[in-house]
Image (cartoon, rainbow, N blue to C red; front, side):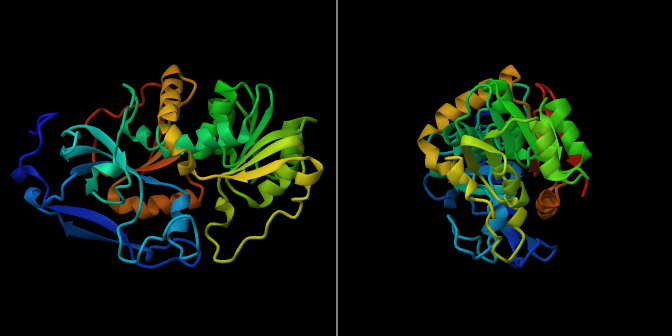
Length: 370
């Protein structure tokens, strides 16, 4: 058995790694032909490049942004190449360390959809998960998902106590963290848009916020009117675009801030989506509409990590996950995200983490069998 802080002996290191790679660029929706699996040989320990560590990947992430990485449409990042392992954030344990990283340490990085990753220490970060919390929280509340919510809301939206904050895709990974920070940390009045009775029940019962079900007979317009009860919107955190954005623009207050985080409603379309028809409301309301990328705030990651961790420990934030077991099921997990099946963060368990990974500390998990 490998000791916690002793490198695995060369004979004990894995020789192969299962990977999920891109085989075809989807025109619209991701299909069963978009990805395939293969088993790749790993180099021997003496062949590891300097400054590289071998990581056993425990969990990998599924995020809306990954759909854009499959397209050749010009974006902030190069698309995943045909034949390349699917790009994704992951969390895992070091099997063989280097340059300050030791065997057994928990790390995060862009490992991709793979069982094992030979990663440069320059692209790996120590993961600090509070006791009693699932290891996978390093990808959600404590990872890029939580930081996206943190910087988008606090640095772009800048809500003040008592202001009205509207969040679309509020039962999703990023939206649910935004809603919790706005309500439990900042003391705002929060309204969440989601699709379906189960998701709206989660928003109301678990998060304690008002909900608008865009799939209901009431719809977004009448639902927002009811939830606002005569008030306007001060901050809108937009994850979906489309009709939700138009509905929000009709009800913004003077000086409102619209945070453009995503537009998942159009990610699966090969056609450019039309912009909001009522964008001139930004003029009359002297409002702003600002997009951002997480890595604009890279120098401030340590502060965000500290804040998110203490809010999680204090109970102001809760972990909610939609967990899919098995790396081969990663494509199905990504499809489930775009089909709206998830509540919370979508993670794929590659290996058991051996830490119990229970539902302590206010965590909530749903395991999907695909």
